Image 1 (cartoon, helix red, strand yellow):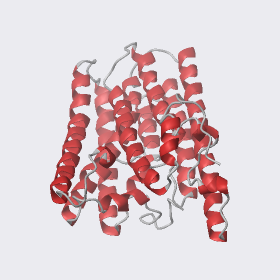
Image 2 (spheres, helix red, strand yellow; image 1 turned 45 degrees about the vertical axis):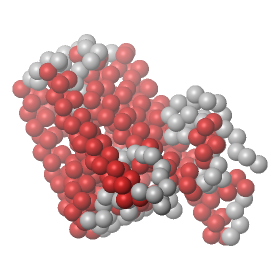
Image 3 (cartoon, helix red, strand yellow; image 1 turned 135 degrees about the vertical axis):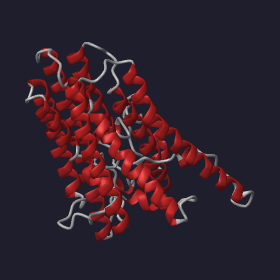
Image 4 (cartoon, one colour; image 1 turned 90 degrees about the horizontal axis):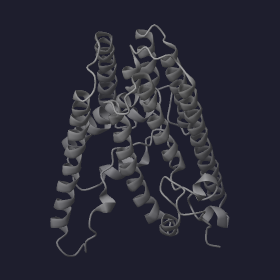
Length: 347
């Protein structure tokens, strides 16, 4: 079964859909070459952003203490091993969802490592506990979709990778391997690390745990519940749709093809909205601990928002080709916010 879910669906996707449509009979090679060039320009821009933005923000913030430096070195070692394994295993098995399997797992040890460096400071224990709840919930959702297997290198691959591999620009194996190394493995795993680094900024601070921390924790738990509800609604809809397809009789509600009720009647990607909100709220623990509204660990949340924009663009370009009504759905329902009202499918 193929359907969208928050869990591990965060792909670095080039915005093919935003590139100009062309007549295949006129200048097809010219336009394909321009698509490829544009794709790599976007790729280089995001790599540049990933490297430079944290560095620039870092210099406008207080320097890392010795314990923060030591903790960061430990995290970088863990990141390097994890991203290297993802690249090697995916290249050998030709299954490129290895990062997907670790997306909801890696933040848990990252934050608990930082809590250990702080001798289990109460704020970092709270942050690590929230990340653990988030990660367990998301991993269970991924598992029920066939994402994990006793043979850890197997499991269901996200269908969008095969679609992307078929795009012009990836005909040669070395190009796809380079994409796998830089973006699927290194970039995405690096982003996972960056989103947890507000906990590094909290490490070593002396501000006691207080009421604002409790408010943030409640907000994160609330967004985790919204994410759960959105994933559950999507799972139930798609499960029943494919069940009816196998029986050879699909009701009008499921002929629409995509989930369009519940939270999805108000937002096209309620699970994506909740995921972004979780990590943006997570950042504010560092604000409370340091007293600074802006610090360099904000970059993880910002880059996550950019990633979700690209991922949702690519997903929607596929969906609108499969289901004609999706274009109307896009016009009537906001992407991440309930800004356009409630959607009602055509009868």
